[in-house]
Length: 399
Image (tube, rainbow, N blue to C red; front, side, top):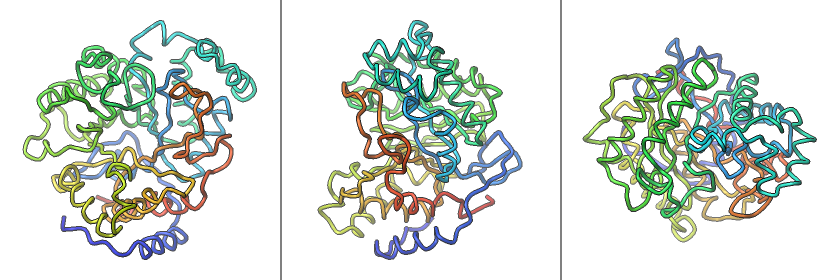
């Protein structure tokens, strides 16, 4: 793959807006399960399936998919599809499936334990049938609702101890950290894989979000990530297995000369995260085209090279402040969209979430990176949705 060529950001935006107006919305008819063919994800018939996902958060202290106090579950699933997304990266904490005391709590009990009385009223109004189900049952109900609406699901192990992610000192960053017991993690992966074995819309499992912190090292990465991948594949051979890198999922460079060594093939995908703030305020302070060229050169060096080596690369998190006032994010977005189009990348937007039950001690926090508004009813920024519609369908249909 040659060096990427970038045009002015005005040209990029004009192209994307015009192109999205004439594109036929993605209506993929796919034969599941999924697998890989060189750098592409394909269905059972070998036809390209492009992941155009949105992240739905379910790993915070309440351990329930966000927004269910605001809108009916089925309505949210239908809204996801109507916005052009074909899959959800649904997050989960290890303790949900390894701590029976937590996993068996009902939604009502979990909300009560955090003093979230308004959210309880919201559930009673919008999703009364699930408020007295266990947290695990509700997680499965969300997956089922997405399936009924033809939305694929990637189960993303985001964290071990429920809470907001991420920092170097949160005890969840790397194997051996306070809350990150490798054996318990593999137990959690195995249980989750078995739980969804035979559920056709669960097409993938992401082993761990944003490995990080002072303990991170390459040798442990190979040891544990390969064990985790084998455990998932053994428990559920249908799902694609998604491996993250180091340094907050920005660095996969160690794979260039040392590929993973696994007993299975045709199911491995690598993931990377890319935000505007990944590069500080470089977009705001520098020439956008020059910054774009420099950032993308680095991205290709530390992760994008995997495409040339014949591995799928899934940008499992990207996103911007959807109020439109963040100059750094706005300039980054033009670069991201041009690269995502040129490389025809699979991706997942951060985030669906309009608000959180509880985040960092704040009740009902507004999520300005969320594609839905505070009430989960309206789209936060319709212009943004129009822009990303240009990359929701595959540019290359067949591998």
